[in-house]
Image 1 (cartoon, rainbow, N blue to C red):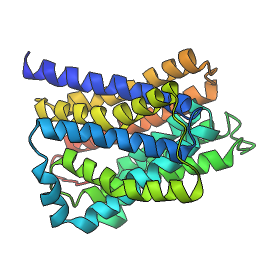
Image 2 (tube, one colour):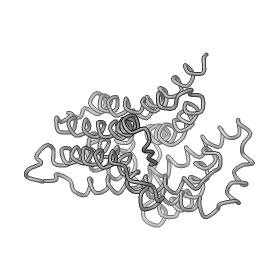
Image 3 (tube, rainbow, N blue to C red):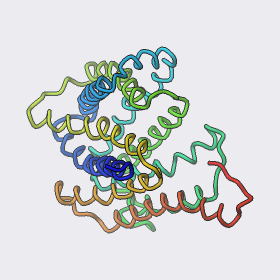
Length: 305
């Protein structure tokens, strides 16, 4: 298979799997509390990544990378999976999947905004435009289209979604300091977080009761939200001749996710959700396209994100 075709296959596989996880979250949360689901999914993801690294003969890198930057992996592990996935699963537990899914996509807008104070990067006009468009979409979703009344149906769930996007952005900002193998780094974050998750579960709740359906649901989330899909996406980016052509596949994910939510979960997709999600996707596209237009018109003016 040609390199470009192989990269497309990896990327499409990752996007298709990610498109199912919002539905999988809702199903799994019928068997587990959010914390229990984090516990099960983290174990499954860790085992999966251990097998992948063993096959790649990279297991010695685990100790090498951890020994070099132990505090870094403590930070990333506490941010995700320990905090982020608890908040994310709680949001999915109390919100319709369509709302939690849509609001979660705003992390791509928030990340460059946080990078200005935290990484000393420059704020582009395109980031401001994208933020205005995206958060207008958020208002559509959060108020179910009744923007003028500014009545939020579930402020706690919406607040959890925003907290989740903040935690996810902080995770990636901290990750900019990590120069190691990305799969090894991901596994180290899980291994560092797992004892914290286990202790919190033992002292605040109870270990999950595992039926066949519960195990299958938790395993699916662990494999296709945190484990295999991440590796597929990395392989797509690594083998692609043009990263942009692979990155654009991400925009298929929310559309496919809505289809799965409607068909499998039986949720009626609200017009306000579609309008809001459309604005968020438009904002993400503007964030990518506007800087290139600016560079084309003003070739001597160089910007950096």
